[in-house]
Length: 152
Image 1 (tube, rainbow, N blue to C red):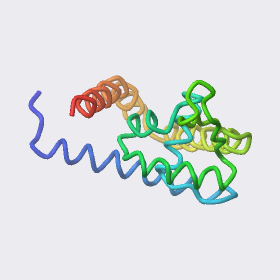
Image 2 (image 1 turned 135 degrees about the vertical axis):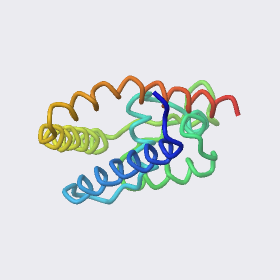
Image 3 (image 1 turned 120 degrees about the vertical axis):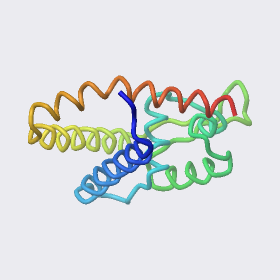
């Protein structure tokens, strides 16, 4: 099946639109300080890799080290991150989530799952099946984008 020339733009627009709407819907009901997208990404990375260093976090997020340092400082100040000195190399900071961050991420994930579950259930069976079938391809697309970013 031949893809339309506009397919990549349509896909990108749809993915960005869904992501933006999810963030807006979830942000409205969460208490506490508002977290920007990069801050949430950093918290999710630290959740997945407790003790990650600032430099490694910057590489993983494809951000400049000083940008991640700025995010870390704000998240420490807001009570979401703990910055510990690495005993093996005192120049290196290791990042850990606070209980408040763990609770915030857990609430975000539960609310996101509920929101998507409700809206996917409203779709007809063909749309639900199409979305389910697209997930593996979207994961492969994300992996290819990640690989390309690592090569450059």
